[in-house]
Image (cartoon, rainbow, N blue to C red; front, top):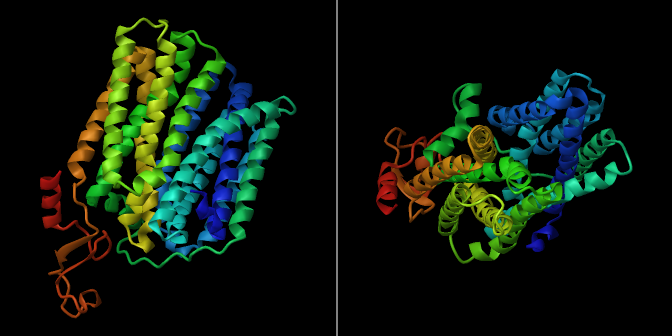
Length: 453
């Protein structure tokens, strides 16, 4: 897996991602303490609103940025967003009003919504070989999981020496270091994109590409599965461990660590697994596993005593399995996006996935918390299981068993002397992507998709 780090450009990009993630982790801890200083007992409401602002920024801004991505050099875009994020981090310690927190969080997350899809679209061009790109996806998954474990521990160590407000300085340093690393390498130039329509049409192109491509519609359904099951873990672990099992704060960290450990284990194994089996053969069974594990957990919550001897190890085992299956669904997703878009359209495709995936979380996060608080964690787990089951069924229906890259199709709307038809004729076969000349999936391929599935 580490062999891809021999590529200097990718090595610098990956390191930039890691230091920015650590900085973000420090900011998460510091923001919670800042919210408590400003709002006191209403800190949870402030943080909840800040998370909602984050999701809204991700859903709304990423596609808008993609409409202009081909006009801005990628290095300039990535570095400028890092500098914006660093500036926000340095400003946060000085705020005194809740609305100021909200405004700065919106600016911070808007910059992240521009940075992340651009970064994701750059990696497959830096690593054009599919096996190398698969290793890069696994490394990225490991980086996210390790950050979730390492950053809180680092923050705790730093807080024993300094005020929490200095953590924002560490956040800014991480973003500046990320920008320096990006500046140190040459990145592929964005390729000019031919699209019709105004800004809205260009911003909506990535979403249209997703909704018109069967495998990407299936990927969106699978992202909903992960969001439904993951929301149960990320939202309700604290209440389950502290309230239902009477555990300690350390037990909460251990439970979340089990979730991260499962994800990391699968991320380490994925490059070899994907070399032997296809994406569909891995991701769909993993989605069924996610749904089944959460369904069994919901049943156990409803039927079993809260503090029985098996409850704690069962929770750890459940979170471990959920983390593993989630990683098996999420990590290969970048391969599907890469396969489904031409190089000039990769930024729009990754921006669309970034936006649509966070829309799924925007639905499941509040649902998981509201149902657990107003009804019972078992009810929340049961409702999320139904959502996951529906998403899995839709993914199976939409993703064909045979999914070739090259598809036969016709262009009756094009004149016979059009450059796209040169040497091929109006009926031809090639690697098919939704773009300005191919606005709809071939009807024959859609029919074959349904019969095969």
